[in-house]
Image (tube, rainbow, N blue to C red; front, side):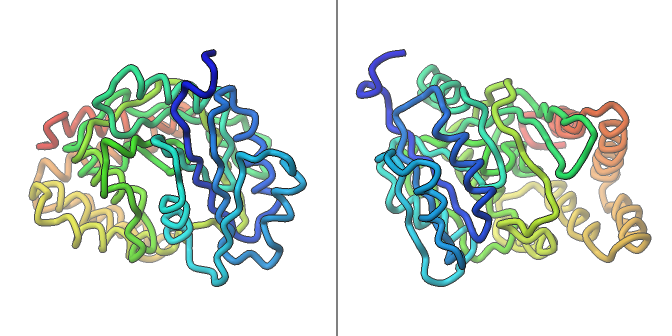
Length: 311
């Protein structure tokens, strides 16, 4: 590898709140990267046990790591924006404190961005792990390419931990809307891919860990986040895309059999084409479970929508 002084600086944005053992694992995976030109911004969102203690244990003498502490618990979007304002790198990589990077994650995404100067963001495939679980981890392999028009329909870039962004290509779009209680990643990626093209490294570069502990984002706020997303972007979305997202909002209602009934009723969209896509999506989810291929549904959805985003 070339001298690190000649390589672009990658700023790693790592928010955390009251999960020192998770933070230690995430931070260790960052420092194990084969790509060395990094700065790591750990944003402590007012943890009761300061994250600085964990950072000191993991990397006491690594000058690339800084801790930014918020005095009041403000949420992951505020924490990430705090880091973005302080980041010095041309490239930005995000990591949630309960996920882990494979050692070549940063190197491969930097290579992809350097090879394609028109890219604004680059995502990747990943491994899904459940804790505690005795079942094997599953590889999530999404679509190998996607357009801005397709991202209007679904969050194909995925969670923050999968994505690296180029600041010069994205300009003032590289910030999080702090009003969103959820799906703020989708809102960010849609704004980004409207500014510059997205790419994918078709390798498994991240381990996404699902567990019973409190997550940085609240899953129960999914419906509210989708409603805000639809309200914000509706004027620029095709009618069938709006109908598709509205159906997903209805699917969030209730629990157990009530939720199952809401899902079934939501398949009956005003447009026969949207109903077909929604039905395909549900079938794809079930088939993906049977085949241990959770990304199957996203690949099928991207094909059915098509690159122009008009189903």
